[in-house]
Image 1 (cartoon, rainbow, N blue to C red):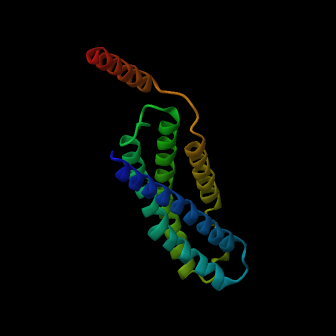
Image 2 (cartoon, rainbow, N blue to C red; image 1 turned 90 degrees about the vertical axis):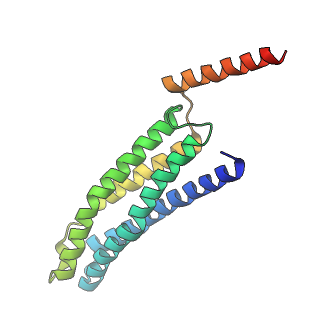
Image 3 (cartoon, rainbow, N blue to C red; image 1 turned 120 degrees about the vertical axis):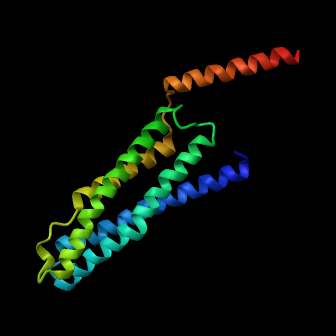
Length: 174
């Protein structure tokens, strides 16, 4: 990828990923409010807002983060399957996105129940999933920043091929 395009893709990936993380924090705030407040209307509003945040922020940002992250990895020297940290990050992101997509049904159901129930304060909330999702996103963030060393088998082969090509090119130039 040309440098300008690479920077644009990277910026988009960082923006969607950080946006996803921020939306999850906002969701957890509402989730905590829904399960701890004694104010019926506040609890009802929290559940409805949770559904909106999931549908209009978390899911779109998660899907965009996955798509742009793949483009970013493929378009840079890191590659998608060459380094363990990139591969683990991809797998964790796919797991987080998969669980999120499954959990959207629960959030929708909670919001519907809260809107129609006389007293929504007895609804269970979704704190285990939302806190688990936050921890997973923080682990992915950690991998992005610290980039633990280690090439996959594919990465070793690819690196060996690149060395051979450079050696052959140097021999031809002489």
